[in-house]
Image (cartoon, rainbow, N blue to C red; front, top):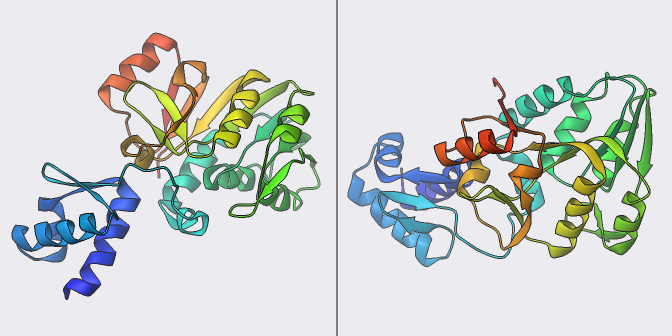
Length: 254
């Protein structure tokens, strides 16, 4: 495979998994380790990846991947996570769904639920749930973030503070080794913190790629969560912390 075709595929793998090793990439593409190292060097010089010993990871940065591209990443895992999460949400309750491609999948998974009241700051979620006659939908209002049709800002926060939700389902852009949930937009962080404060139970939906990513703004500790829904085992340090915090971790079977 020519270099010009191989490098975009390498980038897709790193974005999908959060990281990639030289050995696995060489085996995948049927080329030498040296060839893959050159590819990774080129991608790192273009600031598309970050080189680490034995491979590459997504670069540390202050901007997120484009929303439409995020929708395509780990899609089957997100669907499995969402369906598992939805099984923990009973009929006849109030739910908050926030911004994110994973929470949009949760909205789809809730379409067969009955007698729900869903509050959301995600206009995509509201559109999805209009298919269900059994769901009352309340949109928070706020400043529209055109990149993902999310609603953020003080109006959003003030609306959320008027409620006490049975369940909240949130996402994040990254999780660090200390168990902190991270994001890129400080206004969205403020909204997420308010959601957690106004919810009796808070569920996080996050695929395994979030374990290897980083972002600059802290939302909260995983200690504040009731349950984490993901598609792979958490790193050992995080698993131990979740046990200490009594934060349940559920690995969805894809």
